[in-house]
Length: 67
Image 1 (cartoon, rainbow, N blue to C red):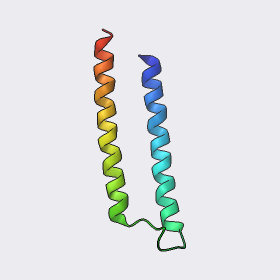
Image 2: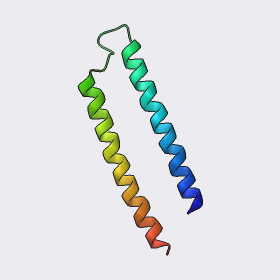
Image 3: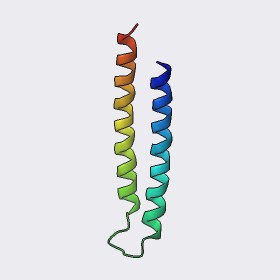
């Protein structure tokens, strides 16, 4: 359980870092076709949150199975 929690925190930090990098890169792009609109960024974040919620659900299920 401890390693799973540590792994979850590690991936959460990587996720936050990638989101920041994506935001920075989309703002710094000189080509208008490569820039992400605010709606696109919002949709990406929303989808990632949904995936995160599903992962939490699976994590809770697996942790309950071991008890």
